[in-house]
Image 1 (cartoon, rainbow, N blue to C red):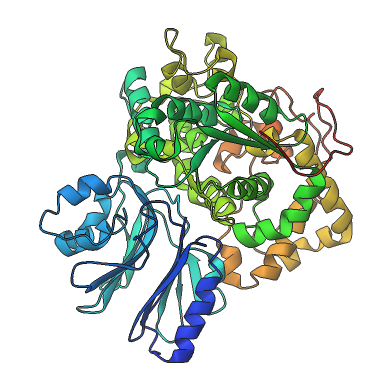
Image 2: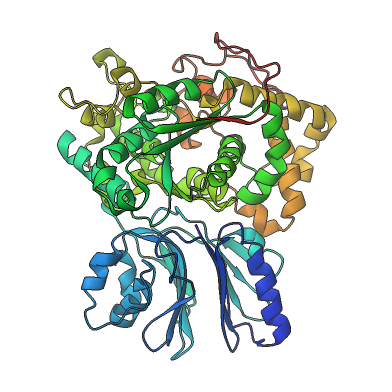
Length: 587
């Protein structure tokens, strides 16, 4: 991932302004440590911090069209850039960068070209012929992006809050699948797939079509000129990504450059479910596997850095981001710059355990639609920023546009969880890759119960966070929480603790408004809590809050909102962590 910052129409072309833009752009250098670039003309500034993945030698940004009248700064990857170049036979390209095609497409098609892009991206494009500009974000919001406005009439666009929050009067999340045009001074949605209306689809389940679509989604993401690997927790989603990658790697350009031996990475507390399952899958696939161990204290010590980089106070996001943040640092230290990851599957297929309680296929489908639309605030934000904090790029094949279209067109009756018929969560995906003749995965991995990342790294992790918050947030503080934090009032001590840290880094009101709120159980939306009356007494984003579903669920126990102490008793026979060595690597 790269970092972009654009300051547009600021009525100030002084050297002092240029220095300020450079200073703010440097706040994004963690995203792109390989090179820095700045284009400045009049009161327009386009800056870029580059993480070089494709064409490291000549793809520095900002990028231009032939006569340098069109300027673009981009964060992301355009997987179909070679196909798009073929549609532009009269254009001359100066680099091998996949992102250069954006400048030429605009020259040829105007603002209508964005839907032609197959990839993950955020970009700002300046047309110096009339000083108009556009900015756009990918369909689902895999890349992070924010928009702000200055008192001088300027428009600001940045990959992260920290690059604009101190200089804008107002700022907000740039919505996924949208384009901002200076000619209209407004945002409009360019991404309009059939599922977005939440109408109930009726296409019969075709397991081979689903399998082909996902294999294509994985293979196209092997476009790289640098070393890469896969994140492998041993759960269904990451294991399928790893399996398909291992099958197809030998035929790719990447294999010719870096060899056909796939590297895989996993993180967890000693004895965690993910470490055990991840190693088993790695052995089955024959990957070079790297285990990263951390302690509860390692994670707690990193919380402030995590919140600064992730830019949220959402509880489940911080819980899951911390192990990923620690793992990303270790991965980058090994010389790897890109990884494939399994985010998005649970939203598309209804994989969270609370989907067991969906009352009918209509509610099931609408909830998957709501979850996909909110991904940019949760798992996409985590995967993007936790990795980018260390100059590592995460690619997510489950959020491929074409794959989502196929998966979301399936009659949701097929996705419904019916335990009496042997259909567990994500059954349609599991069945699609259940190949007896040429198996992708061992059966028990293919049918392993959903484990949320923050749970799978070790159940003691969440318990440790709650205990730590107990030491730093008093009952008296909780009694006044609604007065101190009237927006998204924290209802647990853990949430209050994260909120205090967030407000220290991002004290502006627009910053706190970028974070979603509302009740949740096992990562549900607030609407889905209505599916089971007992859940309203057990509101926690952990998968173990899905009472009667998770094999290691919390015992049902009423929580006290006054002191925020959920105090769960855990039903499991996993070893409790007392003291283990610090972060260690086993390869």
